[in-house]
Structures are given as structure tokens and as C-alpha cells.
Image: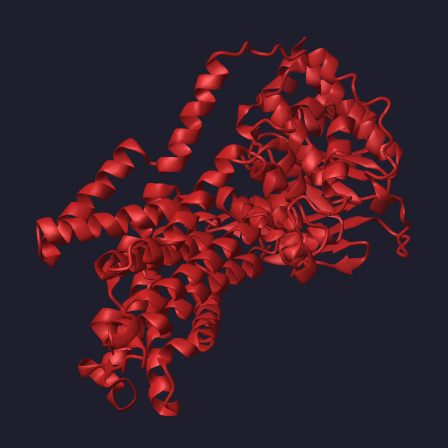
Length: 606
């Protein structure tokens, strides 16, 4: 964050905000201009708050203005009850919005994609209906008249101007804090790939609910003031779906998941809304104009204004620079001098359990009428390299998913260090020392290589969530792991820019950040440059020599047989054979499973 502030471009938005701050003094008779800017501030507050859950985490809410309405009603009802100005109840408005958001978040964040969008709209309309029917409390459709403060006729909009201005600054500060925290890194990881985020120790439920709750706080605080600013609160105005559309449009135009995008978008949408009202008049005309703006944004700037400009500048710079040649063979030789002790610290600590590190007992997993894994028993000895092979469709990846918690088995147990973890969440298993890679790499491709390694969490705690994204020794450890993997030169590259083989190595490096005691590798050698297969084998051997247990699924049989102490053969969802590499290599059942019964007939006829 400090490095970003050193750039001259970082001071531009701050300078513009400073100019906005002095407008009431520069233009003393500017009640109309102040009213427009108050709307701008409100849109920025809402768009920036919405950005925390919908921009960072990718859960798009089209009913988020419900929390503005909750803040408005909190200020109006309690202000009338206690005989105080509603604007002084901003903290209570923020608190009420946060509490409601926490409860709703635990429910609606179980859904994803279109279902989540539809449910958020339903929540908004439900609160509108609730406010209309609780007439003794809310005044029903007639609403609540909120008396103006005593200074209203003398000072006009100016006090409101600075209240909304300060709320806007606080909301921007909140956004900056979240984006530069481990919470922000986790939310971006969830947006990229929620399942993968869970597998590297991110408690996705906690992170999403926390972000959803935080996103409601600016709405609730602003709502308490906004109700008194309007002098009237009613269901249609407090819970208007058009307000949600405007704030989403503001974030999309500026660029969601950025700090300043919602700020720029909020000003653009508020001013465009005012211009359309003056020029065209009527709600229908404004909706038509805003709809046209949304269509043009999606067509020509789908990422938003700031990301589009940033990407264009980046492409221009890259077009003028020479393409760097990457020597794959050199990558494979760069880890020899790197110390491994700190990388595998967890695995060097002896477990009190003397038995196998991982046990699978009677695992059954069905998909409809298909039994993918049928009563599988499997043992992985501590400190070993164990192979799991079998033809395509034999159930290897399904068994991996049952071990790691991606799938819940229909029956059976998974034991880690003698403890039953069958019911544990995916992130809990990662915290307990079980790491896994995927058959198709699942890096967070919108993030840099270094960010991919900083994202994993060895544990979940409030301190971890609020810690800076690059605080503590995470960055040093990440660079150490990258050097161990021979990938140090790629730390600033976007993960999507790497070759498939390099991404495989980065994914393994990402898992090492968890200091796992056992690593499950799902076809690590598939689709990668043959030069890097030797590198991969070298890394696996060094990790195992240092005490890390490895279970590997792989179709590269020579690689498996050269690395593994024990090999389990899976066929049709059942364990066909378990034994040493030599026993597996020469077993007729294994040969038949891979090559078919006709191969044995041909061999007999020779």
C-alpha cells in the first residue's frame, strides 16, 4: 500500500477529493450543487460498500439497497421515539444494518450465481412489504415524517454535505483496509475459485458472511442521515430497487473490485441521473438512459473504466518491451541451494499417533445410480510416497475428493493421524495438515504468483483476517518457497500468464505454504513440459526426504514406479491390488485393467 502511495497517480483522487471538500466555501450560494454532490457521495458510499461483497468476493447483490432502507427506518423510528435528530443515530443505523446482514448472510450466501441475485432482490422486496404492513411501527404506506434539525433553515445543505463527505471518506478507508488485508486476499480467492480457496485453508463461509456484514455498515450509517435529509421515509422510497440498480451501475462503470472505481462510478451515475432528469424528465426516461449506459458499459468496458484504462496502458508498455525467454531447464535446477527446513516445519514435528498418517475405511460414493467408489480401504504410511493408479474413470479423483472434503462420502471414514475427519470442512482439513493439488490447475488467475502464495491460511482467526495482506513473514516465506520451486522470477506475473507446467509448480508451491504433513497430488505430471517432470520428481523426493508424506495419482506410470514405496491400483471404484512397484508392474490383473483382456489373449498366442 505504501509503495502505491508513492506513485504520483495515487495522489490524483486524493487531490480531487480535497477540491470537493472546499466547494461550499468557494461557492457559498451553491445549494443546488451541494444537493447534487450529496447524491454523488451517497452513491459512492453505497457502491463502495457493495464492492466489498460483490466486487471482491463476486457475489452480486441486486437488492443491497435494503440496508440503506434499514438505516433510514432505524433513524426515523428511534429518533421519533427518543426525540433526537435521526442523523445522530448513524451508529445505530450501521449496527442494525450489520446485524440484519449477518443473519441474512448466513442464509443467502449458501447459494451462488443467479440464485443469489434473485434471492437478494426478494429480500429487498420482502422488507418493502414488511415496512408497508407494520403500520404501528413504520407508518405503513403513509411513511414517517422526519423533522429537520434546528439549523436546517439557517445552514441549508452544508452540514449534510460534510456528514456525507466524511461518511464517504470512511467508506473508502474501510474498502482500502479490507482490500489490503488477508480478508481481502481471501475474498478475491473466493471470487476466482471458491472450492480451491477452501482447499488452501480459507474459511469461505466466515469470509463471505464477514464481507457481507461489513458491506452493509456504510448503507446503514448513511441511511440514518439520508432519512432526515429527505424529511420523509416510506417503504417505496427506502426499499427502492432502482437505487440498487444505480449503485450496481456505479460500481460496474468505474470498475468493481478496485478502490477508486466505485468512487468514479458513483459520481458519473449521480451526475448522469441528474442530467437525464433535467433534460428528459420522468422516471421512465431516466431508467431508459441508465439502461443504455449499462448496455454500453457491458459491451465496450465490461471490466469498468479504471481496469480498462489500466489494461490498455499495460498492453502498450508490454508491446514496447521484448519478450523474455524462459529457460525451462534452468528452472529445474534452481532449487538445490534453498534450505527446506522452514518450508516443511509442520511435517518435522512428530505426531503422537504412531500409526498410518492417512487411512480410508470403507469409503462409498455414489452419483445417482453410478457407484464411483465402492467400499475402498486404503492406507498411507507416514513418511512414504504412495501411488494411486488406475484407468480413466476408475474413481481416483472422486476418492481424492472424499479424502479432502470436496465430496461427502455416502459411507465410510477418513482418518488423519488416527482422528476421524470425515465430517470436517475442507478448510479445516487444510489446517490439520492435509494439502492437495488438482488435476487441472486451479490457481487464482487474476492474482499474481506472489498473491497466490500469500492467500493460503494455516489457521483461521480474527487476527489473521485483519492482518495486512503482506504482513508478518508470509512474503518472505512465499519467496523462499518460490525459490525452492525455481519460480522466483515469476512472483510479479499474473498466474494466468504462466505455462501450464509452471502453473502446476506454482500450485504445489501454494500448498507448501500450509506446511502440510501430507500432500495429495492429482496427476501433477499431466500436460506439462517433459523437462519439468524431472523438476517435479526432484521436488517430491526432497520434500519426502525431509519428512513430508505424499500420495500421488498419476497416469505417468514410470514416474509413479520410480518414486513410490507402495502403489494402490483402483479399477471400477475398487482397490484391485496394493503392493510394491515391482509387484504392481508384473501383475496380470493390473495389465488387464489398463490394456483389457484382449491384451492377455494376444500375449498367450505369441
